[in-house]
Length: 490
Image (cartoon, rainbow, N blue to C red):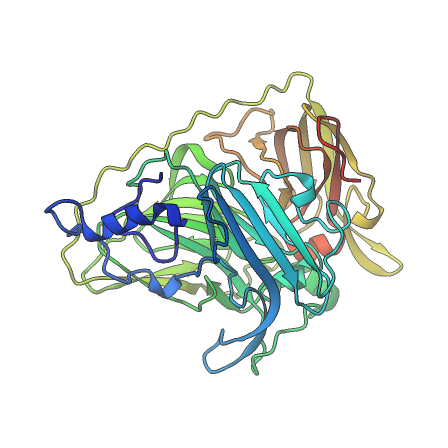
């Protein structure tokens, strides 16, 4: 059973099996009463996300219904937007469970076009991965599909479509999934799960055409002008100065890199895509490419009653991406008028990660490319768009070293479905502090390298640029994993 901080945040609803602990924590143990240094009541209500209704009495199974449908939402003040949603909200229901739990999602497509759900980062069977045409057929309007798998790893993950990905995600289809490890330290900080994104909405509230800007829009990667945190514009969080917070962040934007900064504050990153890192890293800015996650500790400080803006800072991901672009507030932290709490020692989150043995590893060389077919711009890998690509072969138990070279004037967040990998430097040594990743930035004129070992989950696994306009334009491929005890999905 999870150990919880004394003030359980509202935007991270816990499975019902932890409810007695939450109640005890809120009432205060023994004669001591509530923690006098706790966050104020409702401190995180501005970013609260709703949990799904659990239909299953088994405490180790979370079973839920989920419908993709169009819903009129007020994303800009006074305007209604026909957003594409999971369950009627942006983000969709916040799914939270423990390592080893079973998740069953009865999905229904009430959209006007086909869709699927991809469970980004999860090491699940290929048949549950949501890659249309490879791991499952497209789910047609009015049809249903049941996703059913065990959650094998602690960490923050997310879900989104893999049909017309840029448009459907850009219209609002995304949600967060947090897998808890009951053995991790209990007092890392008061927790916030923050889903960052953006949307392109016209002055009348309607959704912008996903093809706006034509080929230049595709090349640049379309970014919305409305920044959202858990579906809200510039929300305000209350905080007790000196009281450590733990921010679990996912970048769910289809193209935008989120570089966050907070004046006179630093971020202590303790984890990312695949859970805790080897050792924490402290920095003045935090960069998340589309698809990436970060687990960071922040200790707000300042004068009582003051407001601390958390800013989006333009990040140079290539030609023109920072030109004439001002910083923007993403959300605010307002300090209470109470005396600052005494900062407590940070628990250790150090993790032993054993480097993969690269002796005899298969080399896989990829180039991220741009070209033209019949007068129309296409993107691809090794000069070939996804619809003409030959799958990369692999065998269960095999270790591969991927070298991903960027030949374009824009950076690319490269994502491999279904498997964690270890980033490598130019000498093929592990990059320290080590961490498990599923998405890595490949900079302009740069190269990304990583090692991956395939466990027993054969099937067709996608890899692609997570600037989804680029993926839809052809910068995508498939890994054909054969062998093992399972059956191939093709």
